[in-house]
Length: 121
Image (cartoon, rainbow, N blue to C red; front, side, top):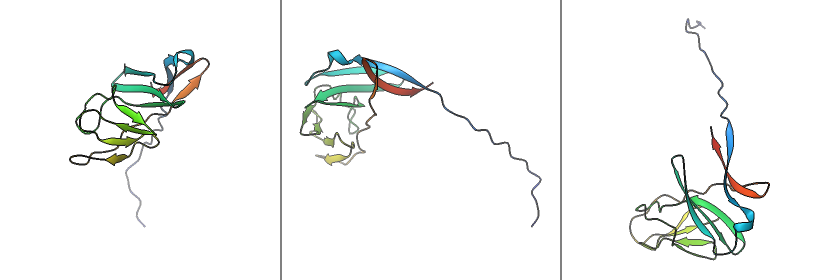
């Protein structure tokens, strides 16, 4: 088999991650909801029925802000067109118009007395 004269330079790049704190644990309670803008992310941190969720702050359907969305039984309902998303995995559960992608969810990281998320440097 003929050998190629091309040489390949393979660079392994390892992304470094940093913890971005969002809130102190003492401030969380059921009904808590707060929006954050970090780098190019618009995030919504919310607590319902003792569970903390971190998700994109705007509906993937028409980018309506989700800060006043109804959350009940692990389902988030957008206030504009009543699209429903699962808070467990972000999937679209109900669409009133054309379908859209699921809701982006982010893992919540606990560090000391704060919670936040990990971001690439």
